[in-house]
Length: 120
Image (cartoon, rainbow, N blue to C red; front, side, top):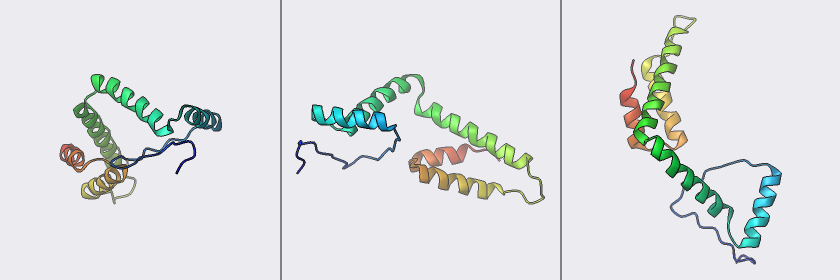
């Protein structure tokens, strides 16, 4: 049982890592102990406010469209900059992309939307 009665709940949440300077970490630690709060509550509130603000300007659909555009640009670069005669086949490019998206924690629904919009 925590001495200062500060508990951490992680059920149903995803961990988002962030590196901060020692000065920021020290202040956060002192603040949370003094106020009986947690770093998680502070970051969660900041992130939720940030997301609400961003969602008004950029929807998920717009973000997906931007990702597809970046991927299509990258595929064009890979196709055109092949020095040797062996280029990365489109199938392997898509497989690599899918693995990267999974690794980043993108939902299967969004992965499918991205993969179907890529142009060969």
